[in-house]
Image (tube, rainbow, N blue to C red; front, side, top):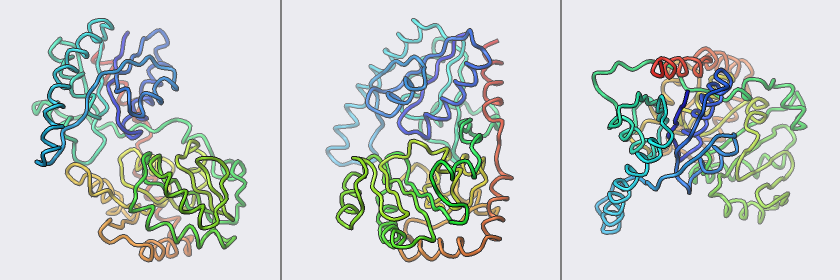
Length: 360
């Protein structure tokens, strides 16, 4: 069988698709799997690194503005969209997939539309409480959605807290805070975290790993000026605090953590639930339909997380909430238990079952 995946943009779209593709490869070793993405986003690195074939099309999203520059960019996007549909059709005809699967990102649009026009069975996965623009355009109202959950990479479930702490050289009797703003980073979270990182670097009671994101080079430079030691071009350290541009060993860091702080993208929340972690969620207000807020509230309403909206975010507010949670093992334990209860651990299998049904 042949499976064609279309996804891109951020790790939140790409990693779940890779999890499902890996499961299909394990259970159908004779199958052929191809990914379509863009040449200048994370999928161009993550997909080949995972051992999958990868082809690209040129596409980007429309700007939600009427400024002269945005209007000009949108005109160019229309041209790219028309070209990308032709590129998608060519790739699909050459590969001849049994099923086409979209996991979000602008690239899904032209690929899925071309597949439908060619009469190829197709499905789309929506990970958020409110669907994105591309998926809303692709979805057919007469089709009932199937609840599958969001796949979590298998390595995230294999590492125990004790094993992870040994790997990171963190004592069992110390608290570990893990904070990140997504693969690219989040400037408001970085700003609120700055004084907390500096303060935590002066104590031995709390360990802290923070990711500034791939856009956070300047942030690392500012902390270097505050006395943080440059371990490499992308890693700083001072005391028990480590600041990185990107966390490559998220499975280890997440497993070791007592408290996770970050955005409320669906992929991150699925990982938090699967690993049963207490968290402080700071939803991005810049996403379609404010879906991260609704993602976060699904946990908050079940006492499975805490929330700080970005409009209320400050270093002091964040520090107080961190201290409140870390000072009570019972509170942390209750939130962990509630988060774990929300996890859907067989998402890969559920999605693969839908794909195999369509293939047959």
